[in-house]
Image 1 (cartoon, helix red, strand yellow):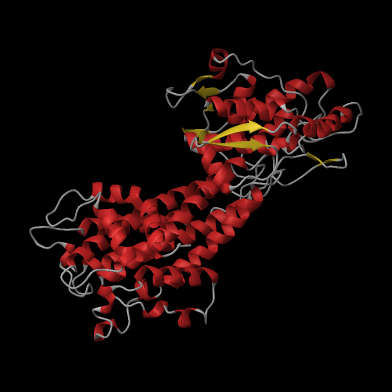
Image 2 (cartoon, rainbow, N blue to C red):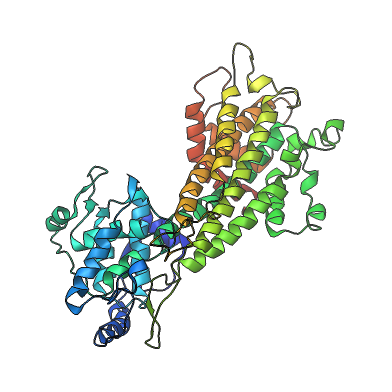
Amino acid sequence: MRDLVVDGSALTIDDVVAVARGQARVSLGDDVPRRMEASRSVVVEALRGDAPVYGVNTGFGALADTPVGQADLTTLQGAIVRSHAAAIGAPLDDETIRAMLLLRARTLAAGYSGVRADLPARLLELLSLDLLPVIPGKGSVGASGDLAQLAHLAQPLIGEGRLRSPGDPAAGRPAGEVLREHGLEPLTLAPKEGLSLVNGTEPMQALLAFSVHDAAMLVQAADVACALSIEALLGTDRPYDERVQVIRPHPGQLVSAANLRGLLAGSPLLASHRHSRHAVQDAYCLRCAPQVHGAVRDVLAHASRVIDIELGAVVDNPIVARDGEVMTSGNFHGEPLAFAADMLAMALAELASISERRVDRMLDPAFSRGLPPFLAPDAGTNSGFMLAQYTAASLVSENKVLAHPASVDTIPTSGKQEDHVSMGWTAVRKLREVVANVRTCLAVEVCCAAQGIDLRADIAAPSEPLRAVHAAIRAWVPMMPVDREVAEQITAVDALLPSLAATASAHAGALR
């Protein structure tokens, strides 16, 4: 358990993941109230004049030109939280909600929003107590940020909506009731505070950060799975030679090829057939792995840059500039996140697609270079891993649907005031499903490749790094000489993937 201070400065993906998974304690920086007071005083001063200030003494969205009288300023802020809490669907998971609490507190603590320090302090207090707002998962177009989800996040601050304390059902309980149990009084929102609670990209940030974090493991696991398959299929490592790779120096390709060279180095199994006629040239799913895996890495690097910037950005509207001017902003628009999520979903879908092709080659005796049909030593009586390929194929096909970009769509909202939206929330939600599907496809490949290596034992052993990986698999999932349930094997290897990547890294030189 580590300590993280939220002071408005940029967070990292690892910060977000650690807090979301309960691996970090969070507190508000001591200097935050003083810094926030500077912009707060600007808002207070603006209310003394008669100039319209969006969301402070005007309505919202298409009602931006509608003035709000002095007597209604506080009512206005509660009303926006209440009225914008319009999301539907199954509640978001606990990790996502913890990340949202952290990220919204960070944005407000940056001191550009003109609100009191009470707001980020209460968000972090809920986080520390693990009192999680119940937030339905659907209902955002990713334009003024994720308005509906953030409104549900904000409701408990004013004693409304629903909160889930540890042990509560998914639907939670009335927030006022939970707050009373913990001795917390609901806040009365001051001018602009309701608007600042609901305007932002933090839900999109959370899901994109999770996916980028998980994808960093998947690209390593894909290289490990591919190396295992190369050994099982009696492939060659010639295409990964540095002399070939450097003449097309895409960064990700160079990394993936270097990983494969390290994983396969010194392999007795590869050496056993290095000069045989069948090893002259492998199929694309083996030979072109660095080009495909590497291209995925390059898209991941772009997505990582996008989320790194966003985790230090201010995405409120309006904002109070450092010189004291209240300025309207479009920083809440989710397009950068939407593009990154859509591109990453398409790229990762290809990681599963090429993996499934390697699985198919291992199962088909016409292409497996001597392996028994479906990797079943007694094929016919046994079906081996036949249905594992069905699973991978179904997920690859599903990914093709999920990889359709959400960001090419837009639909006007708020009386056409918000006439171009990002659909970024849809993009990051789909991406999470793609990530899970890819992970399962890689687990299928690892299961099959491990069986293939067992069936090559009478020829030679694989490389030292892959022997260590194979041993780590077999410590949890025995070889399948006779049919048994395949689903539990896939699930077990799925859970092992991070540790398998770490094992490979420890024995082959650090994988990147």
